[in-house]
Image (cartoon, rainbow over all chains, first blue to last red; front, top):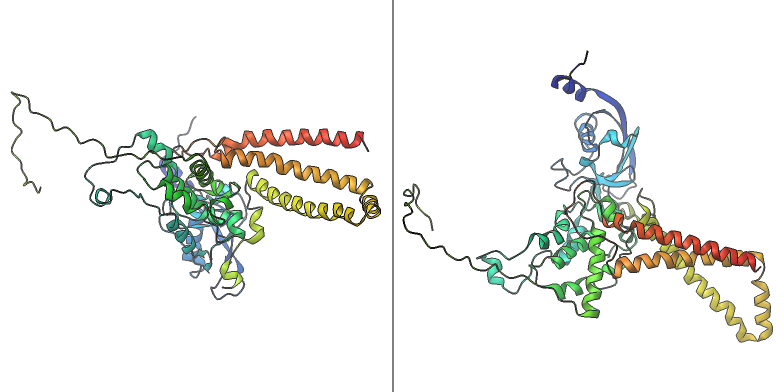
Length: 289
Length: 143
């Protein structure tokens, strides 16, 4: 006799503790003293993420454990940390997938540590700001008070869309071996975003962007270790962005590469009214324009 | 800022991190680069002995011969071969932007530029290996 599983059966299974896992968290008190490891035992149910485990610890075991989180679904990019030696988002790492009895958690490398698992991401945002992450065009009036859209085909959008998925979690800078020994290196996140604006055909600032990172701590410090792409939780592929930036800079300086910048879509032709079509019913609300 | 506040990975960040082949290639590219540079310095010092006359040159040549230096010489070829063949991959991907694939809509499981360039990486490493076998044969044939 076949037995069909009812929804309540699954609910019971979801509630069952499957295994107990030790969370080994590197605790840092923010005073410059050496951090110490502390163990917490977490009962793990199906579907629990590392972030859920941390929340369990905070609610039931030790309220003083500090970590950043917000959305719990890999959108906000707050809960980046080093889980069992690999930089990852805590909310996107299933505890049962790790399949370990001990999970070690430490704050992301290459960022100043504030407390426990809370890094100071100021460097990341400053580096991002340095590449001017916004569309720059000569027609300022149109940018501030848009009248129409800029023409962009789906293919032209797909050419840079991948890089726009960046959530600024900072995992790439934590994994990058170059940032590890050269803190001034601009970093994969900024280079990926620079590629995004270099490819975007609405941006008219290609020539200046080529010079932005063309220095010793800029794009040429990148040697394609690919660690950034490997840890990126959104598939943004910052390594590809960095290589494309190098390629564009070389093409620009050696072969005078110029970018084709798009213009506003043509003004729509206003329609003419044919004879014999019934009038629409009168307006029910006042027009505001 | 103290060391623990700064939390920088340092040289430890060059390897490990449970990451892929390319990070190891990066690590070995840097190490082999340093070794080649050190060899260059040594090479200048050794050949510079000729400036002190033919006798000094002969004495130096005597000192750096023998099976141990022969083996070290082969290790040098291993180092240079890896650096050169991996360097070809880096030139192709970094300067020309080839073998990387195009930016595309990321759909899980993500297929990234690393996956795209891996066949090139494997091919070059196989070629490097073949090259090393040929040179090893040459070394053994002419002791």
